[in-house]
Length: 165
Image 1 (cartoon, rainbow, N blue to C red):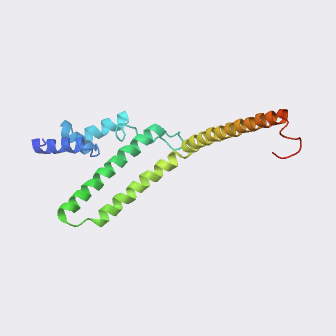
Image 2 (image 1 turned 60 degrees about the horizontal axis):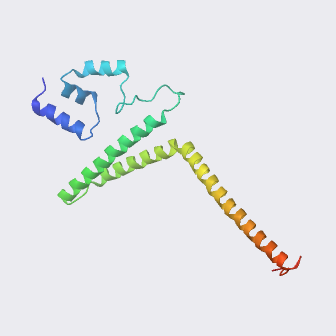
Image 3 (image 1 turned 180 degrees about the vertical axis):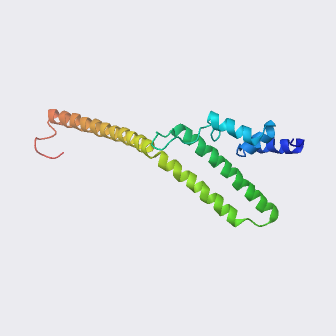
């Protein structure tokens, strides 16, 4: 039977964003890790309530992946903040840990870019098309203004056909 201190430490860790491992969940729920592992496997538990990736070739749930990447990035930022605070207290920083966390954050960012490639390309194309339509409309309006002005000048006799303005 786990001690009250161990259970409290497990609860705090979960509250502060530690990964909900089978061992930690078993500790705070007073269940055996083996039993909880079987239950999780049978019910298809996954990371942060999201079932882990399905069989190869199955479509990717982009919303679930986005939530997983966000949770991972949040945890990495918290870890980076903790390393920074420890460095401030100690007067020196753990360069290896900071480098490792920075590399992991870059990987998460890159994965996010890769998975959003088609979506972002479509959004950018829509934005580009809208900007092009607005520019063409302004050009068209200016042509109409100039044509109207030229027609008025021609009617008034101020402009001869074939001559510049």
